[in-house]
Amino acid sequence: MRPEDLVHFCPPGRLIIGCGARHQLPELLARLGYRRGVLVTDSFFTGHTPWVGEYREAARRHGIDTLVYDGGLPDPTTTLCDEATASVRERLAGAAPDHVIALGGGSNIDLAKALSLTLPEGRPIAAFTGDIGGCRPLPLIALPTTAGTGSEATPGAILLDPANATKIAVMDNELRPRIALIDPEFTYTCPPRVTADAGIDAFTHAIESFLTLDSARFERGGNPDPGYTGRSALTMLFARESMRLCFAWMERAYQLGDDTEARIGMAYASLYAALSYGSAGLNAVHGIAYAVAGQTHKSHGSTNAVMLPYVLDALCDSRRSEMLEIAALMGLTGETPEHTARQVPVAVREMIGRLDIPTDLRRFGIAREQLDALCADALGVTRLAKAMPVEDVEGTYRRIIDNAWEGRLSGCR
Image (cartoon, rainbow, N blue to C red; front, side, top):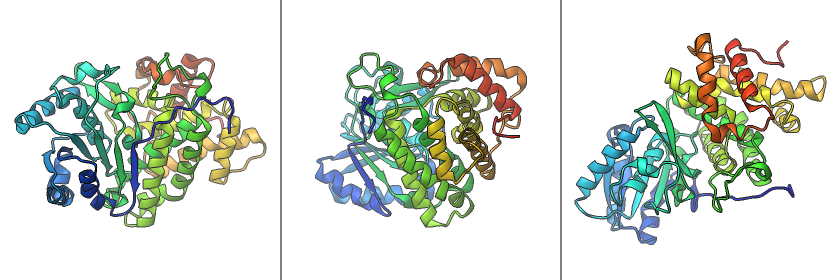
């Protein structure tokens, strides 16, 4: 218990977890009264897995019609969302869907969240950025196929605006899925690179939310129903368990893709991380990673990974006791508590290296002359910069970026 906490916790309406759990979904949706759905996915799942066809047939037997949209793409854009809205509405021919299903990784789930807003009236997604204005989106059912993004438990959708190559957030607790169904069997065929990127994304969510701004200090802007509210004892509980599972299973899932125990462990780790960051929020790792992605177009997991050790290093003073907790989970010891805490960023960087992800910005393809622009872009993500629990956010961001380019950690001798 932390008496100072101001807890505002909004998990999905229903959480279903288990191998083969996807087979329960048609009967559950029929029991809840749903009759016409739109399934949002991509061509891989329609062309190379039986899952979409199996679901449609089972749903039909329960009296549910399902229109499939399989135009999902990595890092979906606002343009893609608007085009998908027009295409689906034309195919519906005036029929009104009563739910949307997302099958895929974070990109497909983000697109489905956006479509749950745009499909009822055909409005462009730009009309909902920032504040959805009291709109009630269609109920969303999320079926994640990777163990990493946690979009099945969060209040937002991230889309790329091609006009200026920046990511925009559509954010509201109404966008949290009504049902999050986590079937680890969906992840069994993930290739090693996707497994590593998703796994380190889950770990980043867990450790970053564990160390982020306290709920009592989090700026809520007078909103009685905020999406993110800072860390609390409740979110930290989920983060601890997620980190423990990541340390146990992440590298094993990457190295031994057919290890079902590791796959299941990471499915739980991803969900627990989402239940933590989905209320606590994040800070500098994601804030700077968005800017790195804008310059390099690398994957979300790897851009988080390259920044993570250096942000952790910057938090060793303000989050000393938490770093010692993490050190204990990792089995790290040092000569003094300070030395032990500073071994955490070093050990995390070594873990990232074992996932074959570059561990400094130079090897990531960033030139020194790009660092000023990188820092400015990162600070521009103000909702994440404000959550960094340090006094001098601007100066800290600059030191983090310089250290990440040089590959410099204080715990290395």
